[in-house]
Image (cartoon, rainbow, N blue to C red):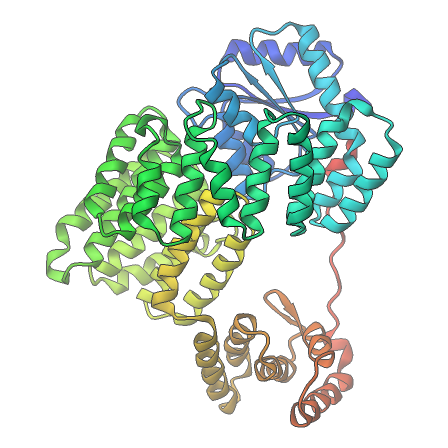
Length: 553
């Protein structure tokens, strides 16, 4: 490992501490060190470059803490598995240490530290990270099966015995990714047989049993963790999520009420507010969010996020009223949207604000203004948006009458929610998506409707427009061969080698491998003849691979 090639990011809000940390790293022969005062700066930089090591302070002044920053980066796909993460904190409280441990950093440095302690910790973390790099690189590419094979090879070689705990944790994470829940449970159980005080293995066992559908077992394990200082709040949050999944909302409320309001994380606060709303306790939701908002007035990112959550509540209140009684609620919502904008510089917050302003215009009956706001190019890019913003977008496009656009976003939203790792976020997402599906409709009826509209456009020889509708029908319900055949035929007739995320030849190959009725097989063969006549037209050249910054170690 060449230290001069290691790209390091330091996130520390205290200027003197930041300078000292950078100087220590330079004395340790690292010379590629970039410093940031808060998470927003790091997030912006990560969109253009990758880091081998992030040194993250927990307390970041009037900004989100280090754990919340990492959670945001993970949610937006900006943090690679192969990035080494070392936390730094002066706080020894079990609650703080517990939060840090929960996001699986490579190591932890407690202030005040000596340069020797820092050097030993950083070097060890990078050494283990380098040892596991072949596995982590495969995980970056979401090749989890291959990553597990590679990890087994590393375990067999056993050239770094001190990395045993890291190897166990990584193996368990891969087993969960691959849906091998029983095997993961066995691994966690074996660790706990050696010592029942290993917290990461306890949570892992609960998680694996939960994902395996053994809800009763995970619930009993969680109840055993109630009352303990280090685990009570997280156990209550878990039990509330399970109860919401079972639609036992009163029970869920009882669990989440056991967490002191001052100790509620941002995600847990939102979950509690959503729980109130499910039970038609909108006043309770509003009061909770307002109290949390005021309590976080000096933490600008949290203040902005809570302001927008509160604004969404007032928009929902306005929506539930007749048009002539909405003015007061909309006035408060607009104030909150503006308040968030004045305090936040984050692009994702700006996108949330934009869609909320569209929703406010729709609720005012000003569709012309809503359409004008939706013409902004930036509002169309939802790639980095969270589920709540995407469901707002679904409602906005439905509100201006563009059902096709709304359905496309809802599909992307459902796909994004499936890959969320944070279970609280996943629970909240399922609530929001269920609400959107009520207005847009279930998948198969939506697919049938879009297919019908596509057929009408196809009959008018508007092949380019028909492709949009057939594409939506196909991705919503790919099991129906007619949707795929209609899409393929329109792609060929429009002479399109690809559309959005699909390629014409790939659609053909996928249909060709299916068991089709005689009529559908004849139709596919006819389309195949048309493709063969202009085959070069449908070949899509692959772009060159992006530079892989992760190979610099």
